[in-house]
Amino acid sequence: MPNFFDIYKNKRIMITGHTGFKGSWLTLWLNMLGAKVLGYSISLPTNPSMFKTLSLHKKIIHINGDVRNYEKLNNVVKKFKPHVIFHLAAQPLVIKSYKDPQETFSTNVLGTLNILEVIRKNSFVIAGVIITSDKCYQNKEFKRGYKENDQLAGIDPYSASKSSAEIISHSYFNSFFSLRNVATARAGNVIGGGDWSPDRIVPDYFRAIKKKKKLIIRNPKSTRPWQHVLEPLGGYLLLGKNLINKNKKVLNNSFNFGPIGDLKSKTVLDLVKNMSKKNFYKVIKKNNLYESKLLQLNCTKVEKKLNWMPVLNFKETINFTKSWYERYINKSDMYEFSKYQILEYIKIAKKKNINWIK
Image (tube, rainbow, N blue to C red; front, side, top):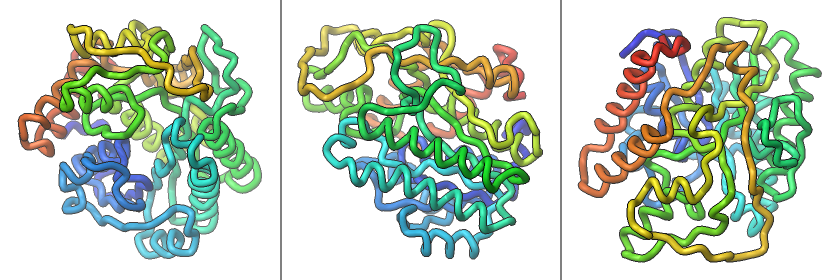
């Protein structure tokens, strides 16, 4: 394994939401880096799930727990004594947030508050990376992309819950964390193998193939900051590394991790057409619930302060994603293939002379 993240070797790392899509990939990557990982999460969010498919429970300490339960969360932290906490636990779906706003707000807001309080009360936690969302911004549909100092707000319950998590985080930064190494990360729309969530375009696509039905899409012209799941995860690891090293440029700060170049302006329909050469979809306006039409991130800040930039272009992103699901359908060893994709991602980055990954 390359040594660009050797700082995580033998470190005790806690991941909340480790059974989810992004959480499973981060768990695998940190395990490959030689970290001692404890995952804290409620029951598997989907069936199938990447976490179960890769049997990741055999590779780490797996704790079934709810981030809203402060007493249990704090007891686990005190016993494990993590050096770093990556907080990914969330109710991550916009459509579900309309169906159950109370669960969305309690998980995304109270859960984040509890993590911040755990960090505040336990000085052995060296660094904390709080994951929020690109949807935390007041949606004015800027073509320039949202900057970290743009106004926070949210029309739908999910977006509002994530902007609330950001506001709480910054309150803790200013009130308690002047000497603590904590930051928030705002990522774009991630795709990649292992996602089985409902109402997400890629897993919906593969479910449609299995059922031999056309893919139903709601908003074909909507633009999203598509990126492979390994892109923001690499950013989180880089951010965590800089927090451990007490880089003053990142302490108590927020960073966008989103696509650049040919990925920045792709629509839902662009993604679907590149997943399949056939006319495999139909457009149905399923409801009148608000969903943003134009969503882009400006990543100038993270490029300047952390030298971070994404690795994969649009074609590579699609190929990584399709190949994972195709291997899954063919019943390949998905643990080994997922490890291979992480190593291939690093290999491509080095070929492109992307400095942050060296």
